[in-house]
Length: 178
Image 1 (cartoon, rainbow, N blue to C red):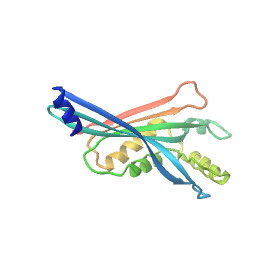
Image 2: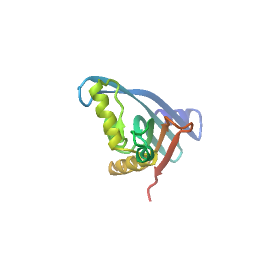
Image 3: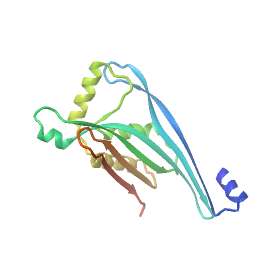
Image 4: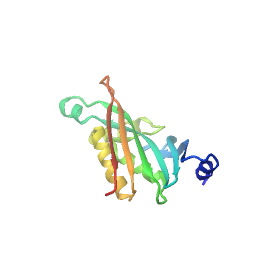
């Protein structure tokens, strides 16, 4: 409604607005059950034209991935990457941001935690080792998860800050209804 009012008062063809904010979730470490706060960057984006009113929600989720190729060729472990998954959803029905974050984290080699004791680090490292993922794997799994949540349109991008390569790894896709 605010964008519609701005559009009308300025006699504009369209109005656009974005609000970006941190979203905090308390997470419990997997073994020690120590509590910590994780920050996820979210945004609301609205677009109003003479023919449409669209509202989008963007969520950025930090993740860990373990390189499947590194695991396959190495006798002594594999290299990890910290990455970010950004999803943008066309809002049509109510959903919980926490549910989307949880689904995305389950698609990675491991979720990130703000507080880990040594026994948690062991668990997270071994969990990632048992769940190697390329960014393409993460994007594919997140796509399937968002599709099950019945969003009408969404985009997904994943980028890993590579730990042993000079370049980053990147993948992108979006869902377009038929």
